Length: 292
Length: 259
Image (cartoon, chains in turn green, yellow):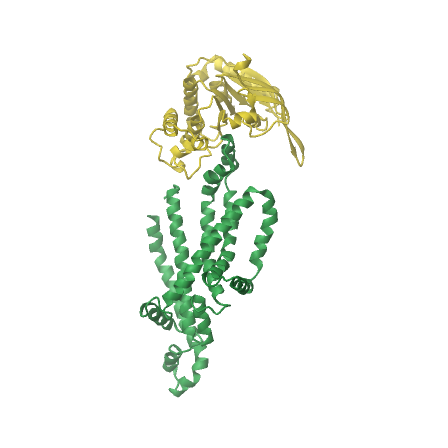
């Protein structure tokens, strides 16, 4: 009910922001592309109309115009069979599968760490600094090492990329779940004590349900960075498939349109993943009796 | 007579160690609660009435003296689920429906006849028909009744209540006092009830324990002997006012009205 109203109210601001972005993008394309397009524009006799025409339709622009990206996405999604290497759908699927595997592994690791930290005081002191330190290492620095080390033991393809995703996304889950599992108030915990409830009963019947809002907030962050992890995992090895490999190949051959369409695909996938987690959250909330 | 004692405290003391030095929450408490008693602890904030209740429930441990509950140590009694505890706030789990909240202790204890116990105890607090509601859909008074049904679902002989109606308005409070009295008469449970309201204590109790702070101790124990079938109207009778006066005198003697 209230959802419908917010949607109607948000159409105008969303449209305005989109229009501003596209206008800025087209203007930027003119200024940035005229540098490389100068000779071609001059050859056509110069002038404003020629400047626009040329700078918005270069084969290898500095910044492709939005419609060029849209055409490229359309062609690589709808005109090529999805199992072909030239299809964007194929590359999205490759990245998505390692994203999801890494997301699941990272979520399990994060929850496991949080449960351990909440139950053993000693661990929160000894483990927490390492967990935080792990995230201060730039992923770009550690990703090639993970790929190489795992490659040397025969693990290639999906798994190493998933490990990188996991490495990134366990962190928000662990932090959020530590907060969530300790969120029950003293009275709710005392109640369990009066029932002489076991540690695992307190965990399943009180701590986990109480942690759900924290878990979903963390999962939304985690799923987006899991995708980043998978893409970064595709870069250092010169992977043959995946969104990352499309970007890499595009930059080798100066195919900026291809890079941008891969970027568009990546952000569309990220948005879909975050939205998907939000959908699951709404279902769980309804099951748990949240106010409509 | 000794076998009848549900709670027996001897020279009970509890001292909290804090950064500002020791806090004498309870000192030299001697108290016997017999089977079927309705005992109220009354006193100003900081007199240790809630602490004493928590010691009985084994939620705090005394630093000196002995306490027995149902003939066992307090911790044995807790592990045997010998009491039901009602907190100052309903402390319902918001993700559970009313019936699931009342059934929570039964799930934990692995009780076989959980469904019928939930039904019976919800009827006892006049909440039949609200089984599928979530806590936020109920008023504060109804939520506290759910928490009473939850404590009763354990089917304990002993009910420990820590200012259960303190957060409710006076009209709702009067109604719930009346219902609690009927419940006590119907179930013959032993009730220990913490309050800071003199009329509430006098109306409900068979015995009133007047406490005073710094250190938390018992000043006076008053037998009320009001008729069992009393209604709220009894609060205007001379007998009632006499008892209320004695409670107030006790509080005064314990310096409860001074700064």
